[in-house]
Each structure stands twice: as structure tokens, then as C-alpha cells.
Amino acid sequence: MIYTITFNPALDYIVRMDKALEIGMTNRSESEEIFYGGKGINVSRVLKNLKIESTALGFVAGFTGDELEKGVKAMGINTDFVHLPSGSTRINVKLKGEAETEINAQGPMIDKASVDKLFEKIDEMKNGDVLVLAGSIPSSLPDDIYEKILERLEDKEVMTVVDATGELLRKVLKYKPFLIKPNNFELEEIFGRKLGNNDEIEECARELQKMGARNVLVSMSSKGAMLVDENGKTSFADCHKGTVKNTVGAGDSMVAGFIAGYLKEGSYEAALRLGSAAGGATAFSDDLATGDEILQLMYK
Image 1 (tube, rainbow, N blue to C red):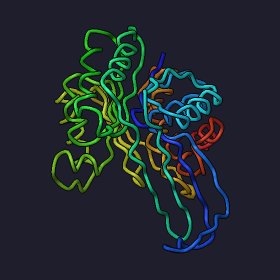
Image 2 (image 1 turned 90 degrees about the vertical axis):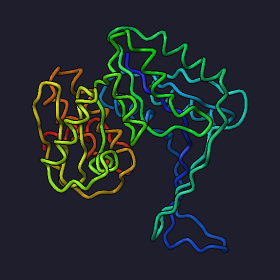
Image 3 (image 1 turned 60 degrees about the vertical axis):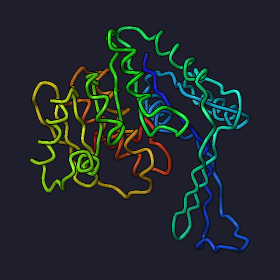
Image 4 (image 1 turned 120 degrees about the vertical axis):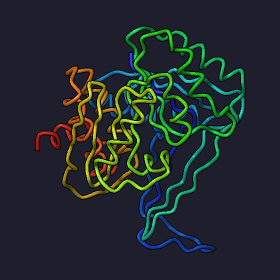
């Protein structure tokens, strides 16, 4: 089974306007939509679109948490969330007009007893399972939560995927994650220098391998993606051509596509192709890409 963890999921309330937001005035929308958000949930959604099952883990709270869980289940995704004793799952408001404005809520307090319940679920994972850790950590959680999770799995053959930034990523490398997915700017942040070409990006990716990562997938925006795999090979995927509508979830889609490609084909080349197509298809869509959209782009 593939498991994804979303520590601080959200209902993303998208409000579309035909003109700019006027501060201090009554503004009227053109349309509204609600999406079930969070990086781990995004990965689970794209995996489902590619006909691969997963279970979404994490924390939910209150009536908004009930709605999020109901919505994710309605998509055909397995859920096993920890229900917090107080608070409410956050609602993020995203205003899309002449300019985009976002208001991201803080989210509920996560108590120690609830963290222990999540640890119990992690302890039940078996050899051959896959765990995806993605995104930032809420302020109510200890900043070493990723490390604690990977430490609990250290003696099991669980394939771990980490999509995080900065020290959060650097500190888990000692647990030898199967895959990490920084972008080129995050590499610059980690190594404290500008990266001007592919050779320099590859050099940094190999440094992360020396620190423990098995495979390093670097997304490079309009320059495509680079994979430095555990067999010593460096592969590239060109950026797909299309009209960018939405960058939210493109990285999560790439992670889901890579996992799906690897599990289906057992090949890093296939994983990179499907991961690149999934990321591109989401960027060209209003929401996360469907399976058909991904496959059409891959074979275009």
C-alpha cells in the first residue's frame, strides 16, 4: 500500500473575480469552487487518477475536517485520518482576479496524543509499502517530526519519498529515502549558492546522494526535470509545451507520476517520463490532471 501524510490539510476555497480586489469595498465573485488541498492529498488524488490505490493519512478536525474527509473518500481514495479533539481543519481562501491573493489559515493545534495515534498507524506499515512525506510542518508539531517518522521505519523495507525543503529535507537524508524532489531553487537554498547550469545542479544532486538520498529528482520549471538515480545515471525530461493555468499541485503530481511509473514499470526512465507528464498536465489544467490528460501529454 502507498500511504501519504498531510499534516495540515485544507479546504481551498477558490473565488474567481472579473476585476481586481477592492480593499474596503464589497466585492462580488464570478464563480466559486472548493478543492480538498494538501500536498499528500494531491499525491493521492493523482495516483488515483493513474489507477493506483493509496491511503491518505494526517490530521483533521471539526466540521471542516469531516467535509474534507468525506470529499476525499468520494474521490475513491482510502482515508485513515487522525481526528483531533478540538479546532477545525483550515479553510484557505484564494482570490483570483486581475491579480491573485491568498489567505492561508493556520490550522488546528495538534496535541501529543494525536501524534502518537499517527505513529501507531506508521508502526503498522509493512515491507513493500510506500510512504510519501510532503510539505511543511505546522507550528504545533515538533520540527523533527519527519525524522521521527523515518526513524520508526528504519528497520523495515518501506520505500520513503520526501518532498520537503531546507533543513527539513537535509535532516532526513541519513535515513536513506528512496526519492527526494527538490527544485533547482531549493537546491540553491540548501547549498547556499547560485546554480547556473545543469552540471552544477547535477553536482548538488550527487552531494545529496552522498548524504543518503537514493534518487534525486530535480524539477527545473521551464527547463524540465533531471533525475540522478541510484545506479549512477543522470536522465533528463524536457519541459512539455502548453499554456500554464495552474502551478499549484504540479510538483505533487510529478511525485505521484514518478511513483506510479516506477511501480508499474520498475524503470527509472519510465518513472521520469510519467512524472514529467503528470507535472506538466496539472500545470496546463485548472485542477490536478486526470489520468487521460497525463497520458495524452506523455505520448504527444
